[in-house]
Length: 258
Ligand SMILES: O=C[C@H](O)COP(=O)(O)O
Image (cartoon, rainbow, N blue to C red; front, top):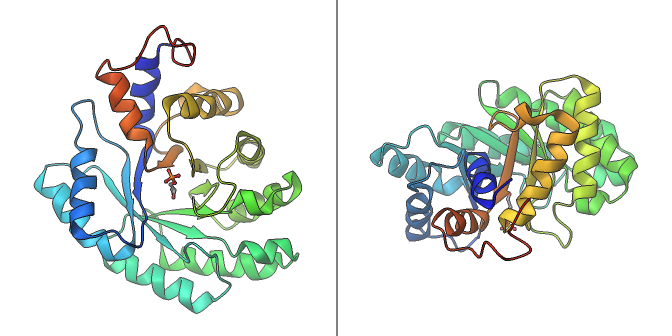
């Protein structure tokens, strides 16, 4: 597949992310500008809850209301404090978020206390009902083993999440193809309509292409739709635009084919 085709396929799958505690209204304005590309738009913008209102307003002004607003709760630490997760999620929903990226209390998985993790996700799902999307971040780089990644994935699927997401992007090991394979296989095995979001450290179309290939192998090509597959990324869109603007080197080994 040519780099241009791969780049075009990635663009509508992106949750264009800015999750810096230093984000200002000006940074959110730049993020919305970035989303407004001549080649199409990302699926969503992912911002901290305090920026939901502004991001939504700016998207509306540009006629980009189909771009969803995602935000994060229980982020990035994945606390076991149920009330905090509920309060943050309720506030985000009230502020107009379309999609909630909730961090699983993953330490409960490490200690075998699946019930506590499950209770939190189930109750957050109740305050974030469909058609709002609930994506649960399992922090696969900390869970580390295929057994724990599979266990967390099964739990999240059972709780009715819309997506399982790899990572917060705030720990040492973020999205990896090995973790993605385990998560995609659990989704496939469940037979449920659950999506997958790879996030953290995916910066180039070459990086993204490996995930597209993996998801195609396990779930089939038709599954690569924003309803079921996302990239959470702060930098990927820039590389997509570089390629679609023809600023890439077609003879480069890395970019000649995906
Ligand atoms: O959820 C998305 C991640 O926080 C983005 O991570 P990134 O900045 O490495 O692309």
